[in-house]
Amino acid sequence: MILRAGLAKASVRAVAEEAGLSVGSLRHYFSEQRELQIYAFELINERAAQRLAAVAGDLPVRDRIEQTMWALLPVTPAQVEEQQIALAFLVESRTDPALAEIVAQDRAAAVDLTRGAILALREAGLADPAVDVETATVELRALLDGLAHAAALHPADMPGHLIRAAVRSWLDGLAP
Image (cartoon, rainbow, N blue to C red; front, top):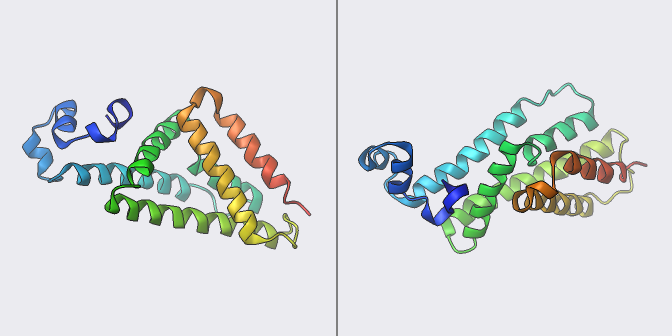
């Protein structure tokens, strides 16, 4: 519903109608529209967490980092749709404190994960020891965010293989 009609139209009533449920049964779980919308955002994060959990911890460092990124970036049609919904939440969070808090937590986790990837590459000798971790974190986050937003807004122009190629190229640039 959010993809088709937008976040503002994803009301309890509209979702109940689309799902073939009574409004009362849906209101049992979500008393207001914002609760339902937050649930949708949390569901996207839960799906991403499941994909992250499936990344094998025994992979070589570079492979593990790439697999982690593919779990989070919109490299499949389903992930593109998730990113499109997440982008709607990101925009709405600018004026909604409840959403802003959730988006800020999500952002902080993404920055921490990115910083951890840079550190792991450096510790494994796959990144120049002189690389400034904070600068590299900002650069990589900007790249990942830009690719994700481009894929959400223009999926035909930003297929998964191009996202993967761009990320791999950037990571290759860290090599000593």
